Length: 111
Image 1 (cartoon, rainbow, N blue to C red):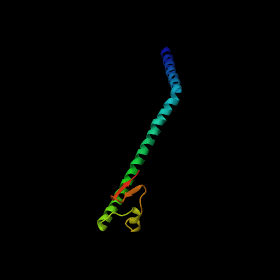
Image 2 (tube, rainbow, N blue to C red):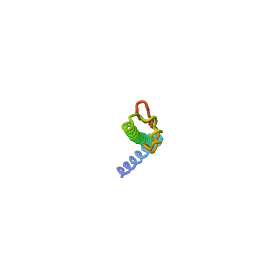
Image 3 (cartoon, helix red, strand yellow):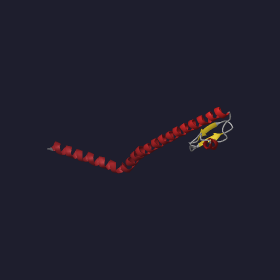
Image 4 (tube, helix red, strand yellow):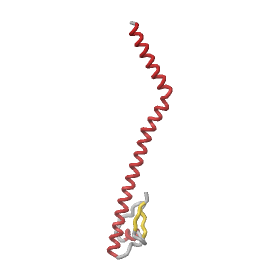
């Protein structure tokens, strides 16, 4: 009977100690877990979005550069502007963030 009471007392003491420890640190532990989990996922998500924007921008730059190069091959000169290519039906639209240097025929993008 003494062993049984000893084990019950030990179990109650450990449970009380664990509860006391949790009560002392629950805000810190819960806050850290939330920040690590949610904050980390937000950062990873933003990295994925930025990478996707870069891929879209890169694809748009490549497509417009190809149209500019084709125009140069056909006419012997660089187009005066991307708007000129749009008016001549070579482009259906000018993608956002695309810039063009008519002196060099270089198309670039900003993210």
